[in-house]
Image (tube, rainbow, N blue to C red):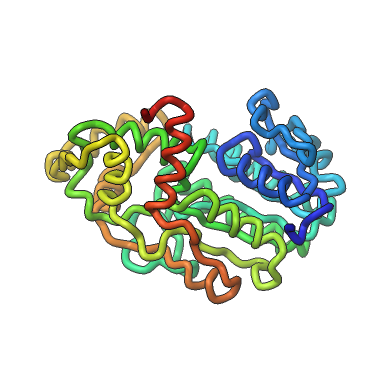
Length: 330
C-alpha cells in the first residue's frame, strides 16, 4: 500500500500517457485520485472506484483552486508537447504557475512536478547530473519546460510550498504513442532508416519506473525541493533501442543515413519551422543524436534508494503485448 493510502491527491494530465499511469497506480494503492482532464471523454481507461474525473484546465486559476481543494499532494503531469512557444508557454509555464498557486492556497503538503531531460538542451554531453546548467536553446518544448521549473522553484520559495521535480527521459511502454507506437512503426520498416550508425545515446525509460519515482517523490523527506533525473543509466544506443522494435517485427536491417547529407538542409528546415513558430534547432539536434551522454540517476539512488528496475529487453517485451492488443504486431 502507498503511504498516501486513503488520502486525496490531484493528478493533472490524467488522461495522458504518464498521468494516466500515475493515476491508476495511486488508485490501485488505495489513494483517492482527482483526475484532472480538459476532455473527460478521453478518460474511459480510468474507470476505478478510487478515481474521480474532474473537468478542468490548468490555465484556469478558478478551476485549479476548486480542483485542488482537500488534496494533500498534487502530481502536476499535464504539459503541451508541441506547438508554438506561445502555446507551450501558456500551458507549460502559465499553467504550472496556476497549479502551484492553487496548491499553495490549499496548503497541500507537496507538489510533484513532471519536467524533462529536455531542459538540459541539445548541447548536453557526457555525464549529466541534476546540477548541470540548463541550456534549453530556442526549442519551444525545451525552453518552456525549463521556464516551468523556474516557476515551481519561485512559487515554492515564496509560499513555502514543498515540491519535488522529476526529469524523465523518453518514456515508453503500453499506451505510449511517441516512444512505443511511433518507434515500432519506424523499427518495422525494413531496412530501418536512422540518422547515422545509431551509436549515439538514447534515453528510453519504462513507464513503471517513472511512476515509481514520481510517487516516491510525493512522500520521501529527502526529495523536498529537489530535482531528480529519471533515465537509463548507463544509456543504451539508438540502435539498441530502435533495433529492439525491429526484432519484434522480425528483422535487424538498418539503413544509416550519413549526417553530412542532412546538415546542408537543416538551416532551411529550421527556417521553415521558425516561421511556423516552432524552431527545432535541427543543426544541434543532429549532433545530439550522434553523441554520447548519460543522464545520471546517482542522486536518486543515493538520496532515495531508487533506480530503474525494468531493463530495455523487459520493457520492450511488455510493450509488445500492448502492440499486439492494438493490432500493430501479429
